[in-house]
Length: 299
Image (cartoon, rainbow, N blue to C red; front, top):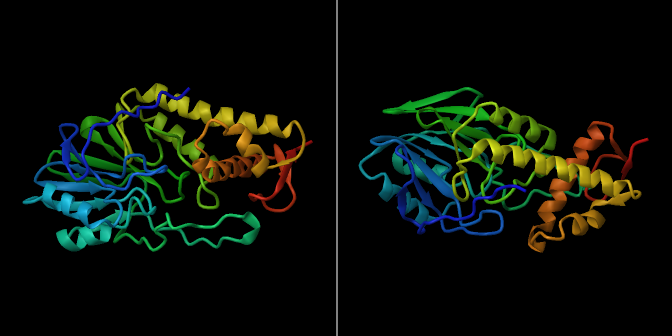
C-alpha cells in the first residue's frame, strides 16, 4: 500500500511559510485531479522563484502578488503544460517582469485509432521564454534550484531540486495524495518508470508536490509508488491470461475501489501500461494500441 499523505491545513489565497525557504499559496481549483487545488511555491526572500503559477484565476494572481509584494521575481518555473499548472505564468510575468522557464507543450497529432483525445486540461499553447534542459541551475540569494527532467506524466515534465533543503518540487510526477495519471500519447509509462528511478537515486529528504501535502518519508514512498505500478502491470497481465480483452472490460474490475469519476483516467493509465507491454513484446494487439483495441498475451 502507498502511504498516502492526505492531511493538509490551508486557506485559499493565504501565503503559508512551509519551510525555511519555501512559501505556498493554494489556488481555489479543487477537483478529482487537483485535490485541494494547485499549490504555487515561492522560493527564497527578496529575490524569489515562483514554481507552477497555476490556473488563470484572477484571485490567485492577486494572492501571489500580495505574497511577493516588495520582492523581485527572478524566475517563473513551470513543471509542465497542464491547465492547472501553467496558464497563470503569462499574467504573472506581465505583472512582475520575470521570464518563464519550462519545456514547451508537445505538438501532438491524435488519431482516432488511439481513441485518445486531448482535453481542456491541456494548456497546449504553453511556450516558455526559455527552454529548460536537464541539469539547468537557477540561483538567488540563499537558494539554488536544479532542473531535473522527468518525462512520464507528460513528455515535457520537469521537477526542481532545492539544494539547500535537499527537497524536490515534484509537480505531478509524484503526489502525496494520489498516484499520477499517465495519458498516452504524451504520457509514457516506460519513461515514467525511468524517471521514478532517476528521482529515487537522488535521495531527496522532502517532496513538495504541486497538489497536496509534502512527502517526508521519501524512500519508502517512492518504493511503494513503483511497487504499485508494477502490481497494476501484473494485474493487467493476469486479466489477459483469462483471454483476450479490451480496456473498457478490465477497468471496472481492476479499479472497482476507485471513484468512478476517475475511471476514464484509469483507462488511459491502463492504456499506458499496455503500450509499454506491447513495446516489450509481452502483449500483442491488432494495429496500434488504443483504448478500443483487443489485447492478448504474446505467445
